[in-house]
Image (cartoon, rainbow over all chains, first blue to last red; front, side):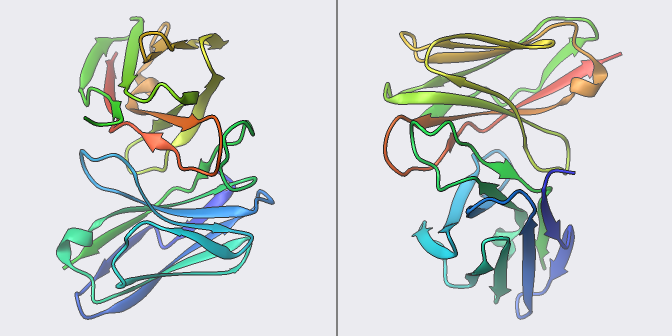
Length: 117
Length: 112
């Protein structure tokens, strides 16, 4: 039990489908993140939310649409994805938005394995 | 040049061996260093967190930072098959809002 729960754990979707990934954190944290992990590549930060406000969007295509209705929940809405979007999508949270000198770090969920066919 | 370099492996060792996992980095302003362990088809879990230079020990794990060489290491003593996983290094600058910079991860295989 990591304190960060992601559903579904596995998802197969066609390129014309619309689906959503869900994340819930039980740690009382105020910042939440979406990362993409592909084989042989470093973790890619996609979005950062701090106190439910999106504070960072790292040039992510619009076919990925995040939503943070409150500080405990984070969604990633998916539509018209491409096969190259197949990857492990990781949700994470931290006490506050990461800032040097704070002794803070992030805690990951188990991830959602996405396959686009 | 990548900000963080990490050999992807796999690194194969027999049970009981001492394992050394390493990362090098290019930005001397990194001050906080972390190691995450990721089992197959699972999310990364925080293993060690160190600040600046020096050593930190936790059970069979020792994290070492050499800022002069821009080099960090994770040592695993008496390695076990359950240590087989991918180990990711990550680091953070000292000031301002920022993101963790990750290495690509080293896959470790410990055989019985």
